[in-house]
Length: 623
Image 1 (cartoon, rainbow, N blue to C red):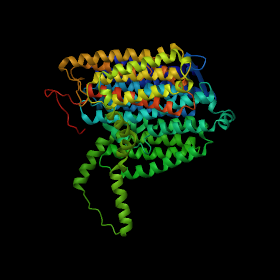
Image 2: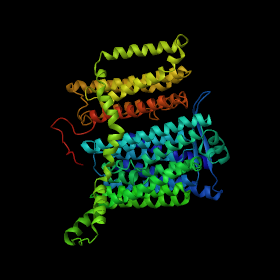
Image 3: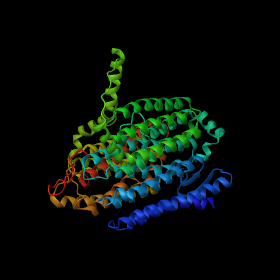
Image 4: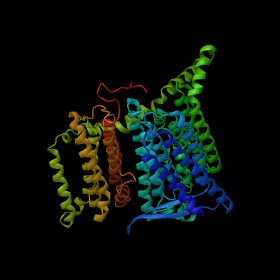
């Protein structure tokens, strides 16, 4: 009984999403009612599950749902897990989701993207439920990826404007960092446990400590990657600046994503993996330190912001910083209560903020009172003013992230001028052919040289995709560079370990089909006026919405989103990289980060943003 109810809780949002896709966009009422019925049915089933679960003793439930791929060295299966943490996150999730869907039914009436909003929201709800019901890291990562893509689409909801599209790419770039950290968690976990570890096994402290005692460095690496993924997802320092930029979407999506559910998934990740890192003192101190300084600085920033959404965003960040501290001290129940209270309060604040803002403006005009003169001593006044200016500038977090994280890679990509020459593709093909010959005749190559080949081809892969990431010219050329990077990754890993050809097919099949589909779409767009330059936004979604949707699906396929076999293929690639090969894993991980950014950059530049033709309405840069 319990197993059937849990399975239905994941299936229902999926069917709601599919039905929403099939409804014509003119039928607003039908679309919104479908979403409300989906969430209501899900809510009723969860209440039944919760009552029955409590009545039967509220023991932990684990279901091994399906095995998607299995080999001698790798087992990828979907695992479902239900406990107190899942129950709280699911309870908060359905209440807020129901509230937001009902609110959006009226709030987005006659909005051009009405259907698009409800379809994405239902897809997000599916991803959210996959995350909170996940029983292993692989299942969690499926939902994590879906939530990330939905974030990008909803931040860029007003896709005819400059800033929403720009900020959507900026936010997604940081999400990619968290995604790759989770992939690295799965990679190192495979070498630590030698099987697909489940969250229920982490509760066996004797079993976990026995492994960590002999592989302490592996445990530190996994815990650090978990921490970075959680920090990025929950917008903790130094990655806090993305959250206000994510508020470019509709108020209702800001409420459900960045006021309540999505933003708290970093806390969920820490709660779920707590038995693994609870004995690692350095990690606990790091979490407490990050949480403390985030709460302190975000509170100051929130108090001086001029926009209500930004104030609420930083207030929520500050509260999540406190939740990090609570989790690190082992106060699980307190963290869950704090999560529920913060999620409900921030959603309420965001939904009523337009009305409150109108009242406050009216009150400011008619009941203005001047501020009393401060009699503070010069030193404290200077200190107060300095803190005020820093908070007003949001501590320049955006600037430092760009300078330290992205600009060095942009510099490398811009300096790789040789990759602009199309004849260079012939040289790349020759180098690739030599790599294939090396794979087939490895016995003829000295071992010392052969060991360097995986790193060499991984470096070429990164160099190629960095050029695609920074390229300002023809989008088709950038698209071909992205596909080339996939081939070089596959070759690099093949040279690194004894590799099954079927695994290469799994990885490359989705990428090749998606790349061909995307290439056809770009050629069709280029025929319109022979201009698909990446130096500007084109906004072709106005005139070619069908091609835009097909190209978006091709982009998702090239990224290895769960709809394609490449999603499993990426995991398979990582299993053939050994635990001591840090340079190789760094190069390939960076390649995957910039592949995702390059693909979505092409999509955004060609199909989103203000249309380049003057007879279409053009939105101001400011949102």
